[in-house]
Image (tube, rainbow, N blue to C red):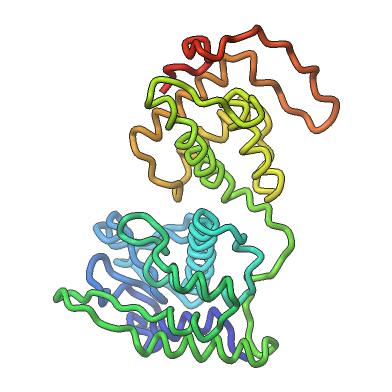
Length: 328
């Protein structure tokens, strides 16, 4: 029976390079940079300089004293698989509407393998880098998926080298999984109806906020505010926009300005958070400042909501009376 973990071992280091005298030591990476140990795990710059490695449990191994045993190498590989699955899931969910957790296990594993191999699913501009692959996955078109996973790498001499052997092995694994799902092991890649993934919620919410703020900011660039749909204040429209999307997708329950503030702060601390421009940072911070001080933003409870407060009449032809006029 084949397993995704064994597949990674084969495509990453079938020759067990770096294994000598019963232990694993770092070896040169084909693409250059810091050395690699075991199955595709690159040392950090600090580890490279100090000739050591920090294991997932925090234990430090000094390579001047000893190498890693098989158990430690396997623990390192397990952690790397989960790390790159998280990268794949985060980036997929940031750019696609269909949740990563609702994809078939083989597609989850395929995306994880790419992230494992090259570190990201984004292109050089920070956008989704695999549009045809995503289309194949969403259409459940196995032939397109197999065709689109081809890739290459730049060697130490600066030449592009196709990863033909690696990709052919992955294609074979996909074919085997498709023909007989019981013949492969995809541990950690389960199809589930539960799409609530807290580790992805912060970057997801910030992307929603940024998109909504971009739309709301357009009229203000002309010095006035266009009336919101259903006569709502723009901030109320933003809250409704986010609540609708959040409730339908079950990503995260953030129902008042305090929780949104906390979410924003935690998002900034996320290792894999999206990159924001200075203007986006300014817009989001301005919104948070307004929401923190405005009596219009009510605490939103699932039951017994507070009575709606009557707002003072505001002349439509006087944009200076708009609560967020000139905010951005």
